[in-house]
Length: 476
Ligand code: ZN
Ligand code: ZN
Image 1 (tube, helix red, strand yellow):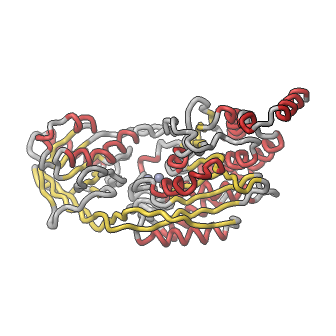
Image 2 (cartoon, rainbow, N blue to C red; image 1 turned 90 degrees about the vertical axis):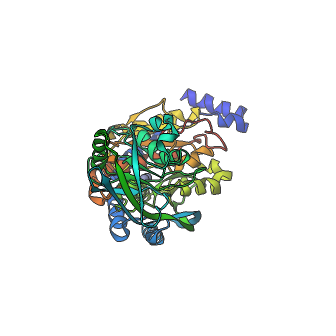
């Protein structure tokens, strides 16, 4: 193998660290062969399904800072230990605790009737006895932004923007913009309260909750109405008669809460300080049991780690699984992890996180240094029989919780799940265990196992360094 010999000679002649950093990252043929076997073995994995079933059944909904927060943490710690990880620990995560006590909405005029709605995370409460006001409607966030504040002052703003289902879930950009930014904008314009058509793609009479952001604004009551109720509101607005709604939301911030990220590790055999990280978030919204969002994410990582642990040898680098605290109300767990580990970010060689359910992965993309592109292509080759395509020109920040870690310099790889069904159930009472498709889940486990194991075995790194991906556009 003359090419390899001359490469080895060149390394000896120019063994400066800078030169070594520019060497292409590669994966040995024997490791590819093991990964192929690992992939096929992981397609039989049952531990991911059992994990999701257990967490959603034995704990259920896991609102951050709520009664089940500590219960979920203790459940996951016990489960990680029972699964045989070499080390399990927690790291604190502090955030303002938001509580939901009760919520009610009804049309008073022109056609009196109740409406199905749910308060958004960080919504203010209505005054005692509720709030009654006329509704002013808009088709989009931009239409509200362009409106004369005089039209909005003292009124209940309603934004009826719609989302449609797509495999890459891109319409969530529309729904999440209205939900996260709409209430603060309405507050700035002097509105009394804010309602939106749920950020979802279903037509069930179930509203989709989710966080809103009042940074720099005075919190006002803010809620999502179900899609059929949004249709109802739009028909009434179209009638031209004044539409009056009564809202009664009892909710709000109730001090600070100290939760924790729960971390488990399989110890690497040769470079134990370096690690591949994967995971999901342990918290969920309260109406469902948080199966697709995001017991699935932790379950997939657990399944992948379990399959790797069954191999005769530990990989060179460690495999880390993180159950992140409070993703839902503002990525608090991911941000705390980034803060705690940014000084040693080069040790986090690569990361990937699932937070889009458990349906089939159809695409892999990565944000890594250019010298590691070949290794990502090698990983993608092993994933090909799982019907996963490699989008070589697209970035991959690793996932929602890992986006903060990526922003401080961790290389990321994104395994994109089919999100066609996801926003039918996301943040609703319908996010329950029955939505997990066992066959599609196992395909996820296989893809994560292959990616984690090959990254942990790779010769060379993926470019993790302080600030390395600061210019990344953060898409995943
Ligand atoms: Zn999530
Ligand atoms: Zn969510």
